[in-house]
Image (cartoon, rainbow, N blue to C red; front, side, top):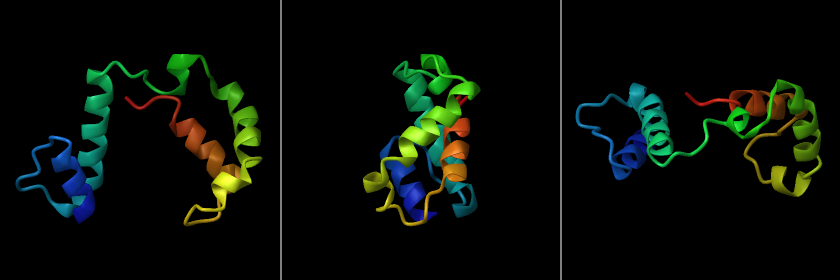
Length: 91
């Protein structure tokens, strides 16, 4: 949590008095504000993907084991599906 506060501050967030318990949300809000300010599309749905595309995205990503083996946890298809579902929209 302390590192999250450091990064949020480095990105311009006001972290004065912020509790470590709120660090993740503060950092996420800061990143989303930056994304909105720079007109980054709001997730995969904004660039044409939908929930029906998730199985294909999962299969494509899961086949890239050279990228997944370096993850700190084992990344399975369920994990990838959840990641893609969450990435459909950020705000």
